[in-house]
Image (tube, rainbow, N blue to C red; front, side, top):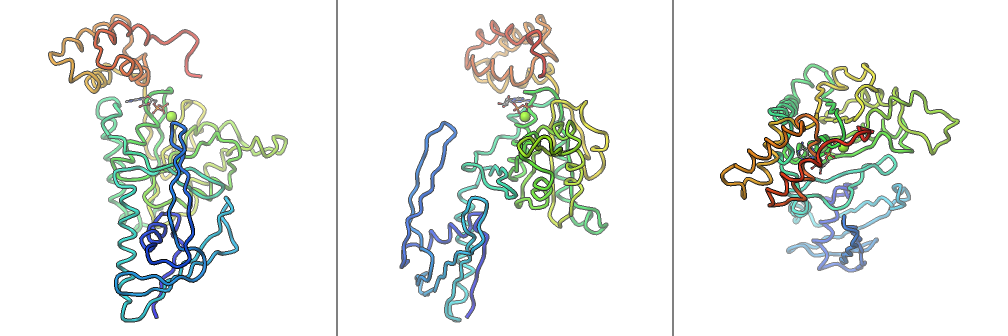
Amino acid sequence: MPSASTNAERYGIVESMIRRLTPAIHHLQIQTAKVARPDGALLTHFSLVPGPGKNIIRYGNAFIAVNRERQKQADRDGKPFETITMTTLYAHRNIFEKIFTEAYDLAQQGTEGKTIIYTSKGTLWEPFGQPKRKRPFDSVVLEHGVADKILEDVKSFLDARTWYLDRGIPYRRGYLLYGPPGTGKTSFIQALAGELDFNIGMLNLSERGLTDDRLNYLLSNIPPRTIVLLEDADAAFTNRTQSDEDGFRGVTVTFSGLLNALDGVASAEERVIFLTTNHVERLDPALVRPGRVDMTVRLGEATEWQIGQLWDRFYAEVDIDGLGKLKFMQRVKELGLVGRASTAALQGLFLYNKGDIDGAITMAEGLLPKEGSDNH
Ligand SMILES: Nc1ncnc2c1ncn2[C@@H]1O[C@H](COP(=O)(O)OP(=O)(O)O)[C@@H](O)[C@H]1O
Ligand SMILES: [Mg+2]
């Protein structure tokens, strides 16, 4: 008798499968999923799923014995790993493929057009909240041509798998985005992931408790189709050793720990890593080696072109004759804002003055960087 078992539960496939099978199930168990929304509201979903142990279910014409077994081993949350074994008659063996396809499609539907954000939990990557709507690629305005240059580079890397493998070169590519806060580093990587239909694994290198070992493990076990985003890369460079004096609480990744993790065991799967920093001057040149960081891009304060593009994104519909844009650009130049205001500040101004051209022009003055409040 053919049987299928898997522990791919983490990726939602098995979960969807169990839901699909529910109507004919014997031992039912109520599964509660609490979802915290960004606004703080807590949503609770209930669903009936087969409980642990043996169940007989019906799928189409076929009866399937489902055995749901908990392992002694548990993940960091204390949730036990499970093995699900399905057994049916030889004559009905073809239904497994159907079940898996259907379950896969169901799991897909939940994430279509979405980006899954993974964060680390111990040594595991775990989805953080519900999948987010993809951020449109052109909603992040970088200096003319820069976004496309990065996109093209990642795409040609992803197309070159056999080229790398044939030559025995680890199939990975690293990028470094640096520049002042609020210039779109994080948002661009989110938009890029959306454009490539990739998910994101986020790690903050300044996070306390992130040890060299954990980082190494996480970077060698990346979920499928996931861009890794290592924020605050400079944190590793202020920290040459994991000193004991600090005690465990203070431990963050060290410089050599980061390099080791970047150079770690190669897998056949692609690995795309983006590092970001507000303090490029703190980075060690040893980071910029092929396979560690292959491409370095500075994102800066808004150029004239970026300001114009952002204006269009917010006001194109109300500023039909383009007069508002002319006036705004003139005002921006009078104030000497080109190359001085961050794109985040511009977005803030435009959001505040949504649909209000005159308001945006009047308040442009507020974009002047405040004395002494320079990049922390
Ligand atoms: N170049 C940009 N184009 C569009 N929006 C931007 C840009 N830069 C910043 N923003 C907006 O400002 C906010 C902060 O941007 P973020 O990506 O976190 O900046 P960084 O990571 O460089 O500090 C986000 O809401 C983002 O949408
Ligand atoms: Mg950021």
